Length: 159
Image (cartoon, rainbow, N blue to C red; front, top):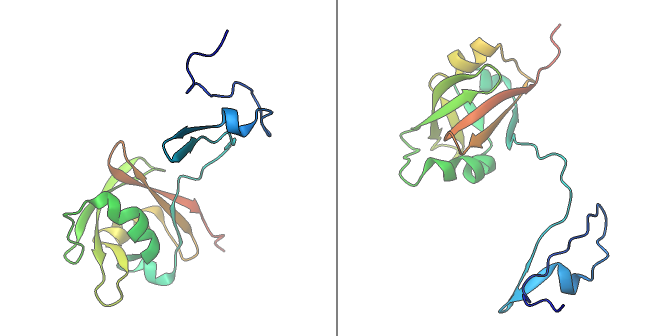
């Protein structure tokens, strides 16, 4: 029986390697001038902590300085167009390890162009969690709850 649906070109082989189907017939479908394909790569783990930082002594004082490229790529888009970062914008942050909610202010530092979390950073994170120089922390955006998650990813050995 001939296939009456010419767009039905999906491979039904279960494969962890190269599929035996010819790619031109089973893995892509041409619409106009664009080829639509799909990936059959197996992904075992995707690290959710997209913003990572090893804490420096300066991060334990008043503000947590964020890498500029990561802030512009991963933080600014979720704040919305109306966020005035020169004045500071409120950001909700859930401590993923302790399941507690906190609010920090993110500001763009005019002098350097970098971004920093401030306000309750020292009280709510540094002191409460006992953060030290060399500890690695991570953040990621939770789109369902519209806040950032925070976690201590690695603690330095303290003597």
